[in-house]
Image (cartoon, rainbow, N blue to C red):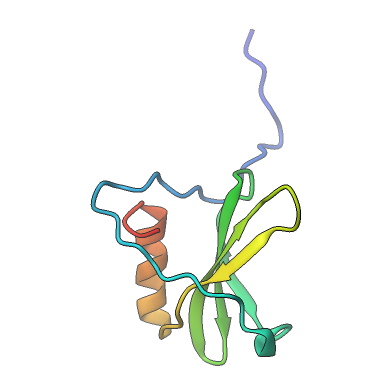
Length: 99
């Protein structure tokens, strides 16, 4: 007999494993002055120890990476890009082409 989990736990996309030719993104500390003015546009599933969010603030987009640790989570942000470039980087992230 097959048992099904319902509703499914994972409803957001997962990030593929980094490919051998994966490019490295630069990760920075979050910008304090943008707190509260950031809009999350897309996100990955948070079932893993590391999850990502595509965010927008001040007309530019960036990727936020959250690593769960034993203490407080470590939150880092990528550089900022125009929406079309950020969307391309987000797609590359999902396919394991950048990390």
